[in-house]
Amino acid sequence: MQLGVPMGSVVTLSDAPFVSVLADEKAVWPDSIGFDELNNKGYVLDKQRSPVFSYILGGMNIKDSIVTGSNGQGLIRTLAISNAVANTYCRLFNGTKVEKLAEDLYAVNDKSYYIRIDKKYNPVIRTMTSGQEIIVKYEGAVTYSIIW
Image 1 (cartoon, rainbow, N blue to C red):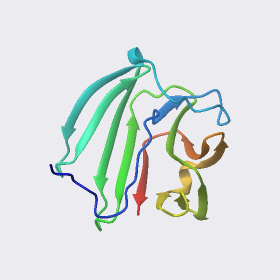
Image 2: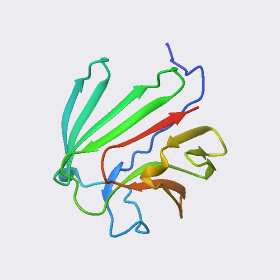
Image 3: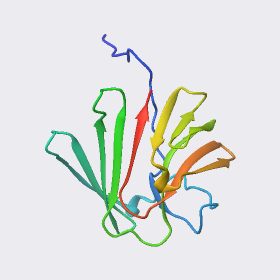
Image 4: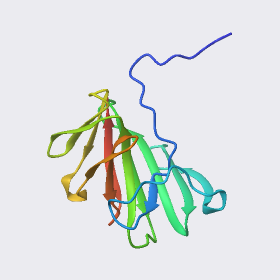
């Protein structure tokens, strides 16, 4: 029996939806979506041969890309929605603790990994019953880095 074990830090992404329409930034993030709400359209490879996933969620056409950072130390995620509706939000991360370290840098789960996001997105740290999360209101493509 063979077992692949990661050599470095492990970052577990949430299985909750990445995009949701909320009444406002204080509304509870949904933990799941209905089966009929998501239509997976597959993926294509970009010029660097990285996958760009496409899906339709609640009538919105979404493109989701995760690529390796230029220095090889992390991932860069970009989300683009071609027909976002009003009050569309993106939840970048959730964990037991999210701490703002600098204008564009956040530590997640006692510094087990970091999120770098430009302040132009106006990220909001919210405390919920299950921990804390970082959300942004969608007003154009969202790009951020996951660093560990």
